[in-house]
Length: 487
Image 1 (cartoon, rainbow, N blue to C red):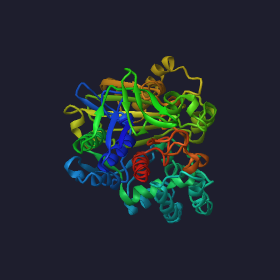
Image 2 (image 1 turned 180 degrees about the vertical axis):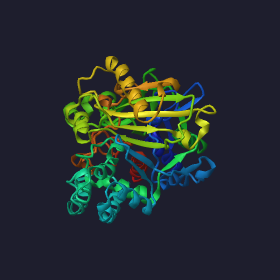
Image 3 (image 1 turned 90 degrees about the vertical axis):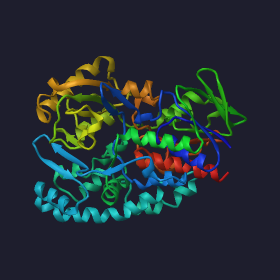
Image 4 (image 1 turned 120 degrees about the horizontal axis):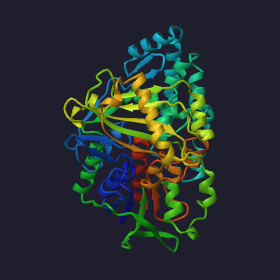
């Protein structure tokens, strides 16, 4: 079969590699000048900035991709395990050093609340079944009601209606520990107060398999998968934005580029945003389920404000990944997800990859990004006006609390806000993670990997099953390849 994959993010690369390895003739068409999607790489003044995902878990999913193509991961990529995985910091100076050493984790819990040590043991014990069920579903399609019906009893038994925060609160009374063990849904665009407790399994996933980094940055993983794809005969077209998915008699028959060029295909895989694909690339007469009204009724994840910056000095007391929790937890999340207003305070993710790989910056320098979750464009924020002041508040905050004299040492920077996700990444409402991972938007209730409206159209990426995050989007590509193999 001749197959066109729209978008060269991790979901598209995962699908493309598997499909090409299965003997299909696959072409990736990518809007931007290089592969990566949300994992695009920015390079300026000797600094290399990973644009998006930086936390690699479930590394065996990457190995599976190379094995599918009869290649060895180590010939393309070097992954190193991090320690700590993160430091979680609060404004009062409390630090939770988070890794997979159980003795260390117990000591970290005891440092904050000695009476909660046994609570941690009960918490981890309760995760075993959640993890087993959750990962049982990660590479299975949910194309029918029957697929969903088979797992409903398990989800009821596991009380999937509870949020991750409520799940953590069953075990921990201390608010800091509740936050430390419930923040993980934010890594995939979810609100800890509304994301189903199934996502608590992220803690167990990290404990079993670690948190990893690709030497050279996440962009090195993009380059490795791109090289793998072309090595086995795949084709890549960059600077090639799709204007339309061509549908004939209800079936996808290729794509039309913005230049007017037509690419014929027997099937199309969209790694683009699901909502934007339906709204902008498929003519309304072919959309029966995913109508404009249906798409607008779904809820979408938050967006992001990200400052990429390089410093002419090193901050050696800062870890590779830092989670900086602000003065409010639920209140801030309500502002982001419910009220959709830009708050005066923030919680931040601070990324310092030069803690692991100094080659990403000039000698004696550090490479960074700081990420602030913010409302998507469904709120009232005027980003052209708000971006500058918001950037200054974040830099001043980091300078006061964590990085002394920061403003004096920044030598280069690049900023993106929700308008980047909407305009450059074609993401509906500027959402950074597409469809929000709530219980009522999971599994069968999430946009399907196989389109219900257009035959021969498939979806890989954050907005479809199983969801955002590297394990999710890589698995979505596997699901698509398996569905096409069944034809």
